[in-house]
Amino acid sequence: MTDKHDVLRRLVRLSRDLGQPEKDYVILSEGNTSARIDDVTFWVKASGVEMHQIGADGFVEMAFDGVLATLDSSDPSDERVKQGLAAARVASSVQAWPSMETPLHALALTLGGARYAAHTHPTPVKAILCSQGAEAAFAGHIFPAEAVVCGEPLFVPYAGPGWPLAWAVREGLLTYNDRYGQPPRVILLQNHGLVALGPTPEAVIAITAMIVRAARTLLGTFALGGPRFIDVS
Image 1 (spheres, helix red, strand yellow):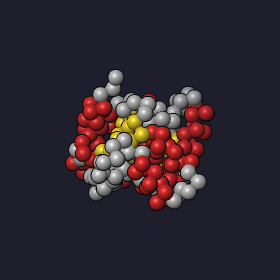
Image 2 (cartoon, one colour; image 1 turned 180 degrees about the vertical axis):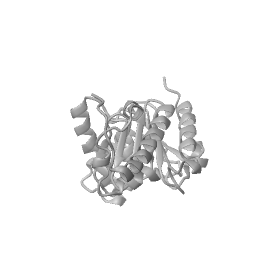
Image 3 (tube, one colour; image 1 turned 90 degrees about the vertical axis):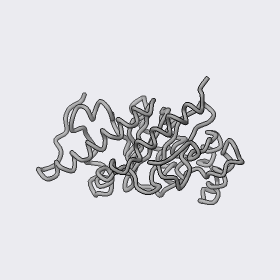
C-alpha cells in the first residue's frame, strides 16, 4: 500500500530542487508539480506557492475522477472549472487552493503514465517555444543522451492556461500514445513551457535538466546554420 505521506515528502524535495532560483526553471509562484498516490488520488501544488521554499502544506490532495470530470463539463468557464476543482479536493476543509493546471497534472498521471510530473518554464526552452520555428526546432534529436533521457517529445500547439491547455494536452496524449504505444517523457507547450513525466522524482529532475541542456544547445546551433539532427532509429 502506498504511503501518501512518503509520496508527499518526495514531491516536496522534487519541487524544491526544480524551484532553485539559480536553475532558472521558474520565477515567483510559476510552475507546479504533482505525484500519484494511487489510482484514486494524487498530490498537486497549491496555487500561489513558490516551489523553492514549498513545504508539505503547499500541496493539495485531489481525486482523479473529480478533476478529470472538469474536462467534460458542458460549461468550461474558469469559474465552473474552479468549482469543480474545489469539489475534487479530498479534504474539503483544506484552505489551500489547487493550481488551475491541476487537470493537466491529472492527465500526466493517468494518460501520461507518470508517477511524478513537473511543469516548469525554463528560459532556454521557453525562448524556443515562443519562436516561429518552435516545432521544427524540436523535431529531431541533436545528441544521444537527449534521445535516451527525453525520448520523443509531445509538442502541443498554444492553448490558454487552465481548461483549454488541459484539453489540448489530452488530445495530444491520446494521439501520441496511439502512435508510439507509450506515453511521452516530455510535453512541450508552445509559448508556455514544458512538462516532465517520470516514475520517480529523480527521473523528472534528469528529464528536465536534459531538455534544458538540449534547448541551450539548440539555441547555439542557430548561430552556425541550425541543428544537425542525428539518426536514433
